[in-house]
Each structure stands twice: as structure tokens, then as C-alpha cells.
Image 1 (cartoon, rainbow, N blue to C red):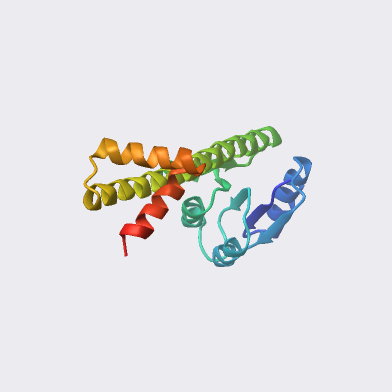
Image 2: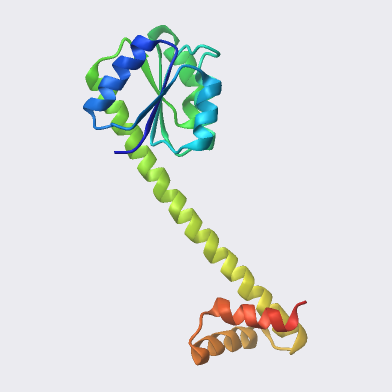
Length: 189
């Protein structure tokens, strides 16, 4: 199972949360009691799940949840007192942080874990898709630069430049990107 980070100002609560997580299959757990230490730990390790039990030793914890949401793909659950839950949700809800009011029961905690796992899975899929699209965009930019070079130096029209790159790719059994790189190495300094 993936890694989980438990951040709690209370040692007793930390143990209870760890027992919950062990019951749901999380065996690789990391613990800390402060937000500053959690920020340092985040730089060294990727976590699938982050649970913040407020208040922490050095801060309340909602700022930390926003920081974690902006800088990781981890699912984040913020535990807080029931009377603060709505106010905290107003502050962190737009960042995808799941708020669970204390006292909590196992079924609500379990549903929250499943919800953030599903959300994380979707986010990772979108991130992968975004990376693939960025690669395609970079390739298209490169090919368009090569077309411009052909148009500038060989006086091709845009359709002629496009056809030339396509034909070279087929004739040399290479990709359009490789053809574009060859063209650019010839005409650009």
C-alpha cells in the first residue's frame, strides 16, 4: 500500500489514527507533530495520504493542508473539532482538502479515506494526461518551427512545408519530430 503521513499534535490521537490506517491496509506510516517538520518531510518523500489532526504543536493546521494540497498529489484529510468544521471548510474546501469533524466514527473515516483515494487517482490520471498533452504541444511547436524555416529559406508554402516534413518522415522511417530537428539543425544556428 502507499505511504501515509500522520500529522497530529496529540500522541494519543496519532496512535488511534495509525490503528485506523492499519485496518485499511496502510502499513507504511510516517508520523510528526509539527507543521514545519511535515513540510520538510514532504520534500523528501511522496505520500498517497496525508492526515492532519488539528491543532498542531506549531500551527493550527489548515494552512499546512493548503500548502500540502498545492504541492502534492496526496489525498488530504483534515480532522478538526465539529464546531470549527464549517469555518475550516470555507478556508480549505477549494483546495480539495477533505474535512472530517471530531469526534468521528470508523465508517465516516473509512468513507473519507476512500473518497480522497478516488480523488487522488483521478488527479494522477489527469496529471498523466496533461504531461502527454504537453509533450504533443512541444512536438507541434518544433514541427511548426521547422515549417517556418522551410518557408523562410526554401520559399515553401505552409502546405508544401507540411507535405515535405510528412514525406521525409515516411521516406526515412522516422518521426516528424526527428525530421523537424534535422531541418532546424540545418537552417537555425
